[in-house]
Image 1 (tube, helix red, strand yellow):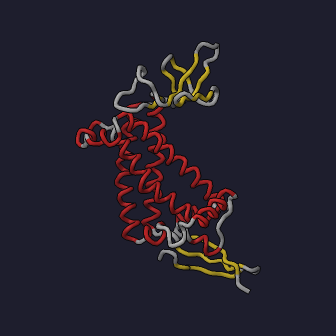
Image 2: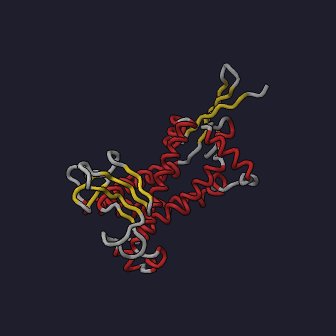
Image 3: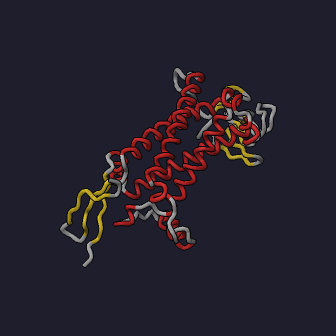
Length: 279
């Protein structure tokens, strides 16, 4: 029933309003269960990172090991000055983020009342395994239903520099698609969904599982694949940040394209468009 028109009416003006079934039930269920799992992962992951906001490369990471990036502080002043340091570059963030407990222990933010690290970490891994199975089901659904072929894979001509450039310009100008064009994903959407679904998310999951002793006992090759436990942690942070960035852009584009219409489409499956009548 996907993309099947279910209602059509003519406006008094010059547009024909129609409704059609955009997302099948399986897509909607997998979308929302994945959203819950990802939100849980990002939330619990933030508090785990808050324990030790320093990133390393290799197998070893501690206060005696040089950090690739870290949240650090200068306590020589009356009010500690807090910095984000990446290599030799420092950005002062005093008053924005950061809290000095006692040197060298610094955290990004104060923990919620009643916070338990063990329970938070257990919830993080539970959400991770839930997302693993959800991701596998989502990939199976995309392939078996034909949505990957019909909706996600670029069509002939879509990958031309001219088309990509035009789409980038439309996004920068916050232009929304109208008419039949609103029924289909544009090339930037397709590329973003493909990269996130088949590269960023799997790598985020694999680097996260590399930090699990039970997983690496069974699959020790993960250490070699990612260059060590601390390298995996750093990559895990980068991929999680990319997922968060994707979500923020995704929500922004929903507001540009019509938040209520798209939200309704992902809840009920019904999507409304208006097509200009030909004279």
